[in-house]
Length: 376
Image 1 (tube, rainbow, N blue to C red):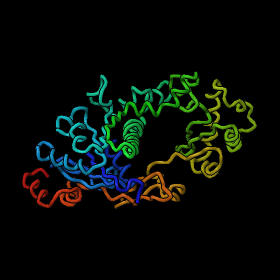
Image 2 (cartoon, rainbow, N blue to C red):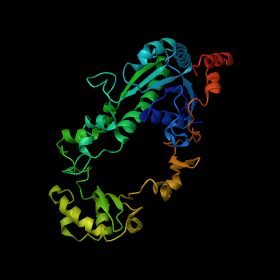
Image 3 (tube, one colour):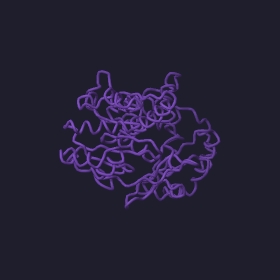
Image 4 (cartoon, rainbow, N blue to C red):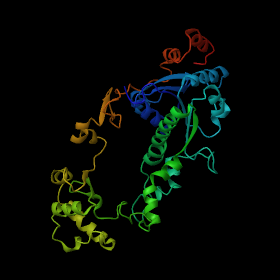
């Protein structure tokens, strides 16, 4: 029984951040019904791990009977979530005004890159474009080099899917007081900017330079960066606090070097980083792990996705699960009482046409008619 047990979510199928949001909700026990396009093949079966934990129906939204079927589903739903460009759901006849008229308690969650309004609202884009205008992309990378895309973690998943899941839970909590649903406008540009809040605070205080690799947390500091080891693999060092920094110097044999005494002298950081790099090159990553891991150095070996699931800390916490031979992150966070069950495997498109529609209020005759009309 996860904490969202009993919450019914209608997911209009999308890509990337939308399925991630649905996965987050499903992992916590919500009942997710995904509406897939008719005659569109499923993504990639068991490998579509973002699609875990829900059922799927295929509905032809180009037919009025298909639109009506979805509207009937909204009457049973607590949440509808969609990720089309602004105006698409309205043109389909499934906009928020129509859906909320059918179910005034509905939380109608919309997620786009640019948001529902603004000069760029109708333009195409991807994660990197959204984080570019938030200031996040500019801040990530090495001095004198191009900005480094942090894969699609900041825009799609952190500033998009995770923020939408948070917004949905907030709206559900508010509905418990007011009895009314509402529309959520989740923009990945907003979310990426929100993730940069602390850095904007630093900048306003004159503590952040607007250029990459010039600041405490962007790789400029010798005590907050990654280092190459003898075997070509890497370690991550985050020894910010003085006591942790002192321990770093002890473990690296540099505690008696007077140049390291003034930790926050930024003019010395490049030279000190070069000295630390030379030390880390004397041992392999695993040798440094043996020396530093589990101490207060604030240390971590940089693991590949192949290695990470087998790290002792991850195995102790069961941070990863294996489903049908596919290794994937386990649901998080952890709850002491309402512990969610492990999510079911990703569905094929339309796999649950009959059973799910009946569970959501359709009669067997209704389902048979939709099949006869080739709506499902």
